[in-house]
Length: 431
Image (tube, rainbow, N blue to C red):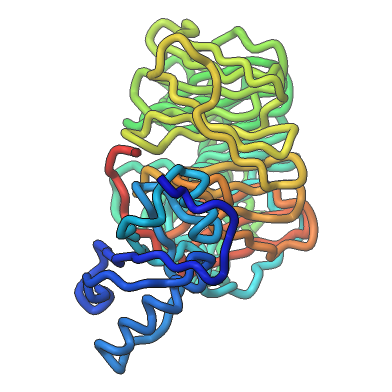
């Protein structure tokens, strides 16, 4: 078998372009000879030429290419040689739309660092730039924020925030206002003895969990009333411009349970299933917890202090985490007998501050880093799909927004939005 060897500009490979994209983007299925040293950009030019010949109205766009389920990120002949694939056969190249931002929105300035974002709801920032609500209640920096999907009308939203002031705040508000409105917390959750670093909401939205610099994880009730035993009512003067107005009720809640086991800061928590919580810590471990018993059921030591954690991918079962080195790691807790990561991505140049799975794709992630970059990843290649350099300082947080955008916040006091990211929904088993 001739596996290709080093790149030879005079050599050709016969390829057939196939795709699952709709008919206007389907090239003729016949095989053609192409230079063996083509990169994906050269292959994109050929596909666009074929599509333009079939339809003069076609607008050229970048594509990515897969061979046997793996993205091609090397010159074609080098890729075939690395994979031991003969250059003598007709190669089937599946092409998909390239995953990369097509537009950078104008940054949204803030008064200080943007340390937390949650892109699961599109209605807080109108037109990606207009602030509609200001949530007030903490006395120190906010470290984490999450929407609580209560299943109410689209105009009614609930949010929980965590802070260095050792508390969590619950807010509820109406999104139908036309001007920025200040909103005070309706419930304060106290019990941690140090900064609260992370918060997650359970799938039923009746509970939340938090991780803290006091090394503990605490569970809290979202609802609660004075009769519940974990909540008391206090009076608090209104925080809006009418400071002389009547006092309003504000509940204070205490934790319903506490999980102990970590030996340093619990930097991230996620609650993917009703009975399962995952946590990441500066003690280098990722742990799985049984919600009912409060017992640790899985403990994986990464060797690095961890800053972020998310659960997603195939069947929402993969764990991605990043921390005090430039490597984003992915584990599969379902695989018995091994604690080694199944994927490692190492293109960042500094600590990783955030990682999030795309909500509808098994393959795609976003990460942010103190190197000032946001990167898009696909499990089918070790190279980043795109590197977004919108920030002028450390990037502290990132998330997907509206399915086709990435939002990020940084030490440059800006919320940045990269939009026009086309991801074909992928939920097939990995090759």
